[in-house]
Length: 322
Image (cartoon, rainbow, N blue to C red; front, side, top):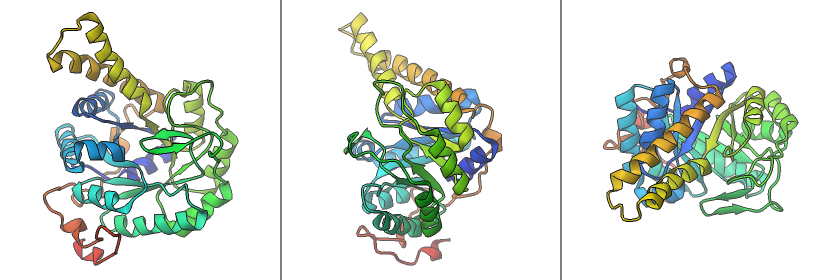
């Protein structure tokens, strides 16, 4: 099965009241770990990379690895670009084979957020690529995006409805009190706000800052309408701690396989736990697989996106590629 857009995947999750765990990966071993977890759990999967990881590994490397995983397993998988603020990187990733992208214009006023999101929608729709946008400001640190507690702001339910109406974006990440990173105390999630937003919009909602949230809060958020749960920091910690453990036991170890294998297993165990927590175990067969199939997954064929936009964001003849 080719990589698919996450649009139908998340629509199925919202309809059936579970969430798809979306994992930020930074190495091949991390990618393999979350894929193996999805196989064991028979779960749909969203593999994510930050802009920093795209710069570190290369969009084409990541896309080929994710496509290989989807082909080998036959599971519904999407490849998502997380928290991107610039158009050239979004275009690069779509051309490489990403099937979902996030335009984060939450730091701008509402009208500019609408304008920037609409521009990405125009680009992505031609290739069947899912688009995620953010309203409000999620606190914490994600790559080079830093939002301290004083700058963080919660999404307004009425603005969410207007934003969806104006942009047509198929997935929305509203700020509801979570934060990127590991929490110092119990997360102060505004569940009433989630309910009000979910009542006003029909699109799947995305929970950012999913690392370290207690199980009962995840369950409540999913029951109220969160259909995608982002997990990043916890995976990095599990991966790094496993490597540290190997070197603590044997500081002279120099075979990467000896420390990468335990790191991979640690990430796999955590990913399986998160899939159970989100309720996606056993749900692979419920996911739609038509959007983006065969359109954005062949990285050697750029005709699906080559006419869409240049590096400055100028639109072109996108429809001809379909």
